[in-house]
Length: 117
Image (tube, rainbow, N blue to C red; front, side, top):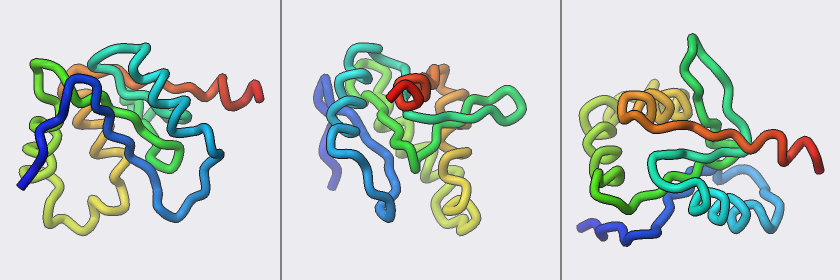
């Protein structure tokens, strides 16, 4: 049984074996809400053949509300292309980046903010 996302819900993807500064999630949540829909935010992203790939180790924030139902689309994408493929566990950043690209989302890197500290 799944819970339907509310208007301003944000999914945060991060590594469970990392330690993050105390303000990281709150800061990213505020930035995510300020940037609006269809923009995934991260503290670091890299380019692979022109595809901007957000890095989960540096947290990925995805706004889930809206009429385009991104949570449902992500779930369907995962079921079709990722679930059951053990190799996808190692390239989660990449398949999330491909999903975002195919869905017409922008990836916004906040790297400059981290480097400036």
